[in-house]
Image (cartoon, rainbow, N blue to C red; front, side, top):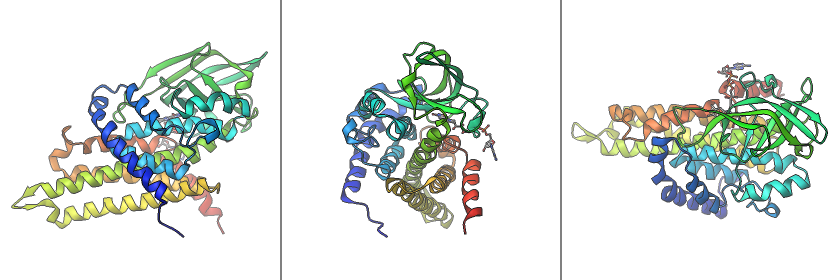
Length: 379
Ligand SMILES: Cc1cc2nc3c(=O)[nH]c(=O)nc-3n(C[C@H](O)[C@H](O)[C@H](O)COP(=O)(O)OP(=O)(O)OC[C@H]3O[C@@H](n4cnc5c(N)ncnc54)[C@H](O)[C@@H]3O)c2cc1C
C-alpha cells in the first residue's frame, strides 16, 4: 500500500492551487453578488484543460484520470465550491460518451467537450423522479429516423448553459424501459424552463430544461434502447458522487484554513482564542474530518482508475465528505463567533455551499441504502 502521490499528481495539485488562487478567487465576490455564470472564467479554465481530464488523449483530453480529478476538484473547491460543482458536472455530462458512446459519437462530441469549446451536463431528475430515478416521466418515441422527446427535467446543473446534454427518457416499461440520448440545445423542441435561485453555489447555474416534441436523431441514442438506467447510474454513482466528494474536500480545506487563521488572530482576554481547548477541539475535529474524507475519496477514485468496482466506496466517500463539509462549516462559523454570520467573512459561504452538496448526486439516505445493501450481504 502506497500513500504517496506521484510527482505528477503533486505537480497537478500545485498548479491547480495556483490557478484557483490567482484566477478564480478574485471572481468569487462577483459570483456571490450576481449569481451569474462567469463565462470568461470558463474560457480561462478551459485553457487549463480541466474539462477534458477524463477524456482519452485521442479525442483531445488529458486522460489524467479519476484520482487526478478529485485532487483538481478539491483545489478548485477550496476557493469556490460553485466552480468545482460546475467542473464536476462537465465531467459527469461527458463520461457517458467516453464509456458508452460509439466511435462516431465519440469523434463528434468528445473533442469540443474536452477543450471546453462546448459544455455538457446530465439530465435525469424530474419532479416525479429524484432519489428514485425510475419515477421519471419524460418519454422518447421513435418516429422515422428520429426520437421525439417530451418531458421536463428539474435541478439540472448548467441546464441553461450546456450545449450537449445526456438525457434519460422512458422508451418502455420496467428497469429496461429507460434509454439515454445525446440532446443538443439547438435541437428543435428543446427549451429552457425556470432558473432556480439557490442559497448557495452562486455562479453555478441550476435550472429546468423542457423538451416539447424535441427531435433527436436516431444516431444520438447512447448504447442500446434499455441501457438508460445503467448508463446514467454508472455516471452518477462513480463520477457524480466522486465529484461531490471532491467539492466537499474543497470546502473542508477552506474551513480549516479560515478557522486556524481566525483563531490565531482573534485576541480575547490578552490571548488568541486558539489557546482555548474548546476552540482547539473544534479545529482538531475539522482537521480529522479532512483527512478521513481525503482517504475515502482518494481511495474510491483510485479504484475507479484501476477499473475496480467502486459504487459502494464512492457512496461512502460522497456521504462522508459532504456530511463532513456541513459539520466543518458549522464549526468554522462557530469559531468565528458573530463574525461568522457576517458576509465579510467567507465561512458563511462555506456553510451555504456545503449543505447543497448532500442532495446533489444522491442524498445521504440513498448513500446509506447503497452501503447497507453491501454490508448486509458481505460474508
Ligand atoms: C444543486 C443541485 C444540483 C443538481 N444537479 C443535477 C443534475 O445536474 N442532473 C440531475 O439529473 N439532477 C441533479 N440534481 C438532482 C439531485 O440528484 C436530486 O435532488 C437528488 O437525487 C434528490 O432527489 P429529490 O431532490 O427529488 O429529493 P427526493 O427524492 O424527493 O427526497 C426527499 C427526501 O426523502 C429521502 N428519501 C427518498 N427516498 C428515500 C428512501 N428510499 N429511503 C429513505 N429516504 C428517502 C431523501 O433522502 C430526502 O431526504 C441536483 C440537485 C441539486 C440540489
